[in-house]
Image (cartoon, rainbow, N blue to C red; front, side):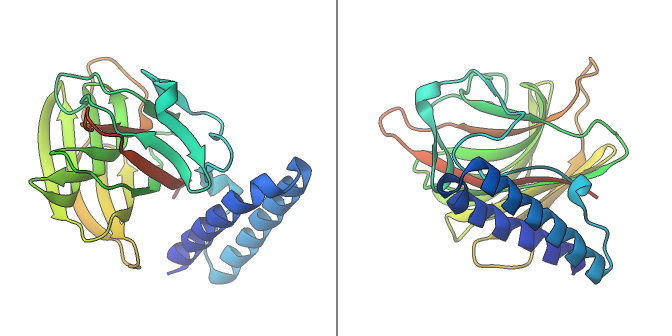
Length: 251
């Protein structure tokens, strides 16, 4: 309960920061952000859980620009933008599931380097797909051929949470769960060589398990990153996915 309360506060702050950052001078926003970090630490101590600025490895509310550390793979600059709602990426044709590996605007961010850490990565997605397998994914990423994804995807006409694993471009679907809302929070929880995917539809408070698997192992020692991916979009229409409340925490 303490952990859920702290993470809830972090997500509320992300929404407040998205509104406040464009309205305040940079020094004023920095003071406000410092006040939040101190308040969160005191609140966590009161609840009996040690949550500090160090346990939040990275947070991005996509207010005004991308946070530090992000890099693009096959960037298409005209197909992504920052809005008051967060980061928006156009879902273009292309694919990352299997050997095609040609999707554009693959967004990457580094993870903490210590292998024995338990990491939790969460994000909020919202989009309205119309094409079979059109999707927006949160991905534990080694390279284009080795990854684990959990995402919001249209499968056989049904909006679904889909989790899958890919190794040497060979794919395995772990879960397809129908989704009743267009907005959903997703998270990956990783420890050593195992990873679990969970989801929380908009308006709900409890996380639900989608699937779990071992991590794929590339032949070379590639350092994993976290990735946001959108692909299998229509060629005849423009669809945008909204990404917000991105958070990496160390447990």
